[in-house]
Amino acid sequence: MTQEMTTRTRMKDGFSRRKALRLSAFGLAVLVAGCGVTRNDWQVAYPDAVPAEQARSWHVTAVNVVTPQTLTTSDVNGWTPDYDIVWHGDEPGDRRAQVSALMTTAIRSATAELKGKTPVTISVTMQQFHAITPNVEKYANFTGVHDIKFTMQVVNARTRKPLTPPTLIEANAPALVGSKARNARAQGYTQKQEVIEDVAKVVKGYFSLGPDPRHGFSRLGR
Image (cartoon, rainbow, N blue to C red; front, top):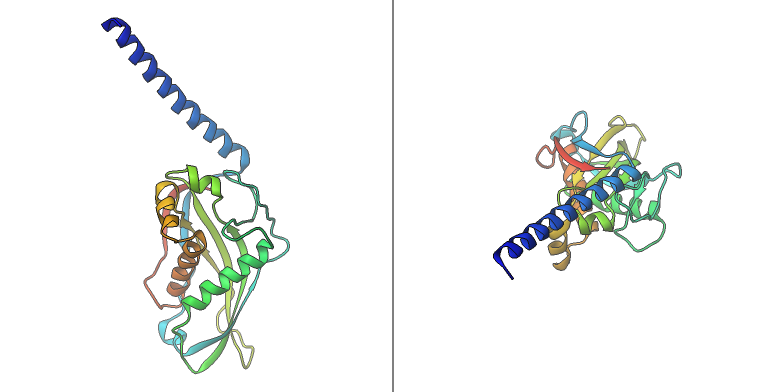
């Protein structure tokens, strides 16, 4: 093969690779745009943390998590399925019940060190639980957010008197994707553990049991 032919072949191969990358990026953009509204701006947020002295006077006797039937749900394995509940971290089943159980575990973990004298009940109503799909976890690199929002209220278990107002908590978190997700899963660290830890960290902050987790971040997600 002459030098000129070799050069042309390299240029053609390079062009083909660049074209394939552009088409791949275009295809991903079409998928994202076609399946739901995407965002770049996210936050972990709640109005005010419970003062540490107040929180440490409580012990939690029950955590009640309600995932309303009005929240839409689907097992579609797309890029940004436009539903309120998207969860693939358990086997196929009742996704609302699975979300309630996961949230209960996370909140109990976060409040386990509360050993005060006043018995309290924590009531939670889910507003959104949109975790990433297997497709996003497998193929994305810098995309994917676990979009989790809920309202929380603490009530005296004896008197039924509210001790906090119903408080909206945004526990959004960048999801593990691509090679980071593959490495984590290979070590036995599941998406379920990932989400439980993310939610628990936010709840601990809300009860002044750990660092204040409130912050904003940018990442493409639904």
